[in-house]
Length: 611
Image (cartoon, rainbow, N blue to C red; front, side, top):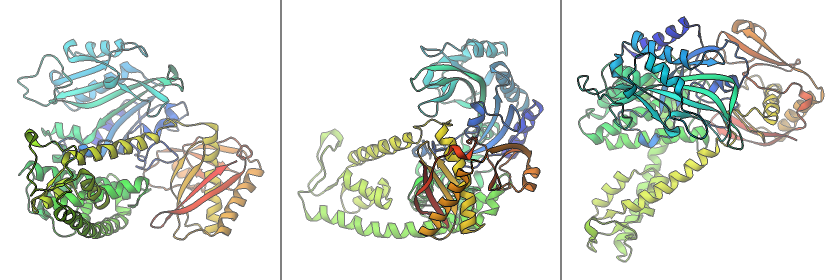
């Protein structure tokens, strides 16, 4: 079964169970300050998981494109991917644990044909916050899963969320498939055995963690499930390597063709090929999104830049001499544009940015080589500089004086500033009869990663489901501001992303030139004029075609479902949006733009507040 067939089989199955198929949301979260990218199928559904009514009902299913950067340093093995597709189904206060587990079991055993004897599951063991999930345990047992294959695991294994400090969360039940010898399946499930591969996760969102750290039962209890398309496709075809999936393997084949190397020929070559394939695939999907992001030095653009540059570095390691990123990008577009039509629409933007970034990075590398030579010469000329502090030499032996040691600090400087991988620095050092203080480099790298994780964690400070009154007001102000900008700057202005916290709104929009002070003042005046009118905000649920004919703003591609919410503010604004919003413009206060700047090529960014 190929990936296309699995996608369709999953959606058809849950459609037969009364679920409405909804399209994949953008990879760039709209009006969500908590994350850089859409990380799971539930992410765009947070308002509805918190109780807001979804226009397509209480049973939903989708194939959601996702980006996860938390494990980006793990990419290169058989299973980790930065971009992946998540098969998901949801109950918004509809069915509970029993039905969710029964659906999962039926799909795995009947639709996919997985033998029961190769399945194992885990359930929440219970702790001071919540009890043992005996209900899930009994359902699995009644379906024929042996008790020895049902693991009772703690919160770190079988609990989802909250994504931030507060929000919806609950116990989950994970499903595993034995990928080892079918004639030697262990009687007892051991989650530490890598041959048991997780394939699906049913999350039971029945709690809300409040600001005091207490777990309260939610009024609306939900089910949120997720199955990785690539991993499941690999298992269905007998692979233990997701890169051999039908929609990823052509990328590997192209890398083989360009590099003259063979996948599997060595551990190092295989790892580099996986990183090139994964990173350029992810970058292409982000740039080709309906809210496509170009490489830059901030936020999502920084991730795109990092992905492309790391791929180029690994291309050098497998001796790819010429520019190659656009060739890989084109293969990704060819493989994925049938499912995600926005890729074909945005292909010129994708390929141009890939080529430009590769050229820029190669120039940076050239500058880096000059700097690297200066550093190496410094160690050669001054025999007292060894950089040996904290160095863990094998058997405690010091190197001869003839072999200066490049400090971890200098090695990390070359890595961070010019993108030199440690392998490249070591190779350059060895050619000069030098060694690199790898231990010191790792310490600097760890410190840098800790700072990055802390910064990333800050994205979650407000929790995923921030529907505070201030956030609602700023969300409403963003609608008024977009309408005002289209009046002042022209109808070419469209939203390209937003990030709203209770303190401020950040709004990216399509416009090539810096706004003048006069234009900024006029936008502010128009917004405050609407606030002073104290206009009620009206929400309607319409069919997509009705919304289009009504004149509602929106990118009319496959991002919307059959029914949409349209928010109307007098004669000023009519937009398709998930909400939530204020009830009346008079509730907003005074609108003020505090900054206008460039976000990326052809995209400007505004930061604004309400007083």
